[in-house]
Image 1 (cartoon, helix red, strand yellow):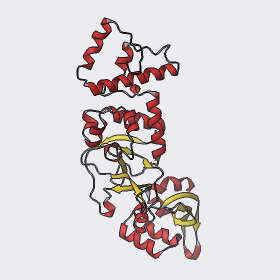
Image 2 (image 1 turned 180 degrees about the vertical axis):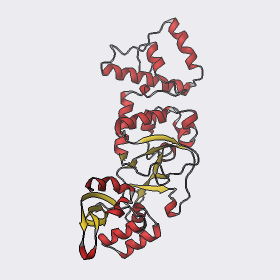
Image 3 (image 1 turned 90 degrees about the vertical axis):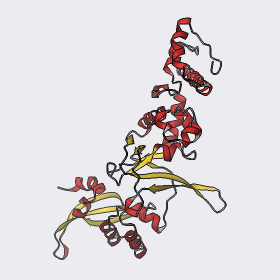
Image 4 (image 1 turned 90 degrees about the horizontal axis):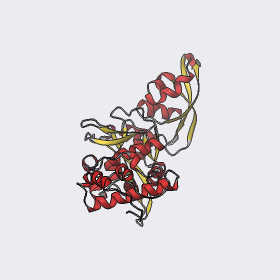
Amino acid sequence: MGDGHALEMSDGDWTELLPTLKDSNGHHFDSWCNNVSRKVTCDFRNGRRPDKTIRLSDLLQTSTGMRCSSSDAMTDDAKEIVNTWINSTFYYEADVYAETEKGFAIHVHEDLVAKKDVMPDGVLQALGAIEMSKLRSQKRRLISHEPQVVENLRTCFQDTLPQCIIKEKPTGQARIRLSREEVRDEQGMLAGHKEVRFGDKSVGDKQIRNPAWIIQNARYANVLLDLTPEGTARTLGGILDNVQEILAENPTWNREMILELLQEGATPKLYSVQGVAQNLSEGNNFREATCTFQHPSGYLVPNVKIPVSLMLSVNIYKEQVQPHLN
């Protein structure tokens, strides 16, 4: 069976096993045999069993592909494939807007399963997919025929990026969808990848309200930066046209420019807060936070003094400012 493993089965064992195979076709059966043999081989190599003989318990514990399997059905080799892919494709980033329409969401089917350049065949197979071509083209099969793929993906994210959340988004709920696309050079060669947003109401996109399995608190790793005026404005958020105008009029990032961005609803990345002090100059009497912001290209803009009241009005800055308040 599988890769030439010995099979040890009694008549009673066959009587118990056969009803579980009644809905299988040839493709399901072949995939199931391979799953069993891989799991037995892996357990033997890791000292979890005395030999590579396949018995009834091994057959019953491994999914036939016709029903939802537990993540325990994944072999260690399969988990390693998926975990390596997750670590090289994503990174964790807390999303304070996760439960609002401003929150980001990677759609499991549209952005991963349906895109071979993002989720290669080897990864999808390791997740327990049985009929990959149908699963890639038919979103409903992710729930109706192969729910083990999402369950195994959830378990692997728990192993690698446990703060990322995989859950079902109901119909009517809107989130900003994050996808990844290839970038080609003038000769058509792959130059890298870029992150693309869909359904962002603040820039005029139509909101996405269809049901979907989504991943939250995750961003794509190793993507090319879009530092065009529009790309930078989209990264910063806020009112797109107004933010683009500020960027065009202020080529140098400084306190005045960052204040303008904040007033237009943009949220440049706050790298750190050095402290809070009272501003008493020229008759003023208010607290200022001394901050370091980060330009979308990565360089730091230090010693930017922003009124504490403005910093506290931006949810994603609160946690970094509050420890400095007495």
